[in-house]
Image (cartoon, rainbow, N blue to C red):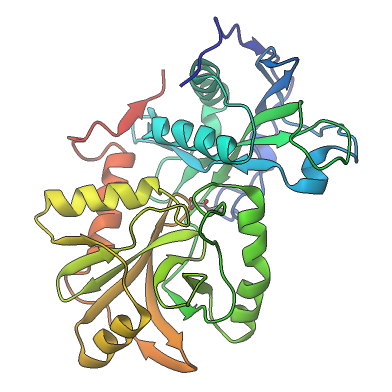
Length: 356
Ligand code: COI
């Protein structure tokens, strides 16, 4: 954790809101942005004045290192509104810790904690009208950092920009997803950046995901890069498997993102007395479980989708279909998480943070 004196946040407010032009009932995920954004530059070894200003274009040199070496990391978080109009964040300290962990991996300087939280609270106060109450509605927050130093020498930049954008969203996926198990491409490798929310980590998934879509699948289930033997993540999410009544997910490693939703699902399962097994699960074991009927569910977990149930998976060109059980863990955890996020249930974990 680093702090830098007092944040002295500078706020430049908009003259006229753009909110009237937004159709909140027909949003495309992450396409509309609220009135204000946060910006803070790093130079001379120090983060400069943190500033909130009207959302708008940036002027950046085409030679900025981010465009050439992808030195950029991001976070995904959400703000929720309850039926009384009060606004909440969900475990924001986890996102703060993770963006600095990702930054460290990408040789980007860490961001001060007080700057981050002052910015979040101020932005959400300014743009709280952009958050609609109701299940699935939220304001998706996108903190990110990029290398702005001009120059194409392949070395870490000495200038950066930390920003936070906010986008009103509805549910990420409309229904259950069909996935294909990766047998050729990989998401991450030992010693790589899989555990970081590095921008290029996501961009590298687009091509194999397009190939999966051409074959009629929505997402790729990523396997280990060495042998394509172990199940690691699903699309941009962590992934859970329910075999009989045990919930299995891959252990955190330098290949796997330490997901906030993943961590919360494990805590909810343990509280409910559901057996959890954080271990490597092989594709062979999954196929056997699908064939003998002991595989009950597969679901992804992430900030954007919350919980995303898988209705079928493909391996070796064979499809395996899953019938959602009456006591679906995916349905249960999604409801429990959202009840906490929308302030409809007691939060014994202390995960829900009121925006003041
Ligand atoms: C998340 O759900 O946590 C994500 O990072 C999704 C984002 C890439 C849209």
